[in-house]
Length: 266
Image (cartoon, rainbow, N blue to C red; front, side):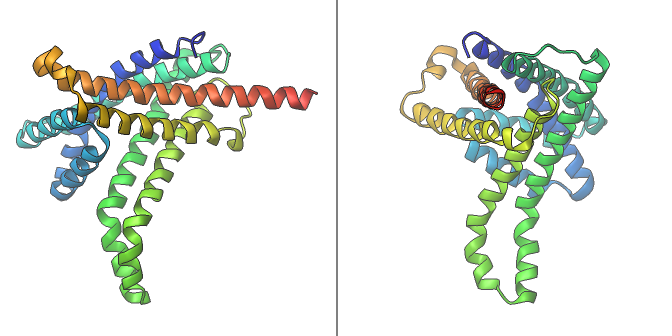
């Protein structure tokens, strides 16, 4: 990790993630306002942001989302999608470079092909995000409808609160596996060699998020040091931990792949 400058590259990822989150909120809320009013979607979005983010960072995102929702300026949807894809794709290019370093490979793809891979991965991640949120929003109604007709309604009411989190974990795990499979310039990777890093990245990100929340509940020096910018710094730190988890998972996959290659050669 030290030789591959993982900590510096994680800071680079945090920068791009920070600039892509707010255009993403604009795009999502504008899209849902056009399709279905967006009220229920916005409540679910805030509920899961509240579960994942530390308090000050959540308050910053919630206030921004409210400002975006209250504003009815034209062109929000197209502008939000354009800015989101541009900034998020730039972040994905940084992920590609970081994973190439982790796997000790050089980028042999052309600039156009690398941009295409970054764009497609960004689009896939956005689709998984929308599907996951749609699952949480409309899953209970759909499941209750099916359970009522099949005859397992009481069982569904008991099982659903437990089932939704493993399914959400599966969404996140699949998205991370796609990154490890297609982002680095490595051909012929097998999925069984990709999922260990994806699982480790998810668990590390989860542990870091919980640890950051516990730390801020005991001592919040960011507000004292940065004043009104404390929430921004906390959000950047959370993105830094997320980027660090992605790169550490790539380092783990690289080590496992190298050890398997040495074993096969032996």
